Image (cartoon, rainbow, N blue to C red; front, top):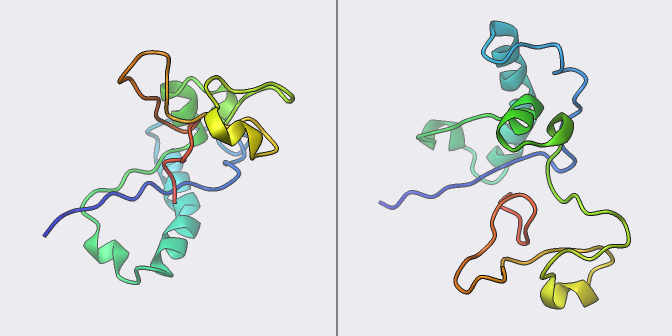
Length: 124
């Protein structure tokens, strides 16, 4: 049977303060990731009750991971355009939404944008 992927992340991001004094890879850091991921697991289990038995690979991020690997200030996640500005290549959505929202297109033919700053988001 085919496999599927399902990136899941919290809607408003995770507060940075509880994480900022933790050392990535430490027991305390890993416990915090496990603890904070439970709300997301429970949300997915509402649709797929046995998801934890079926999952083949799972990785839990954190604001520290976003800060280190995505170069996000204090681990933020998602759109980051200044109020009143338009996202580059917002396309048709720029007239429909009350905030700027980029689509996948770039000025390079055949090159598409992806990630947390694009629509549709890679999240459930």
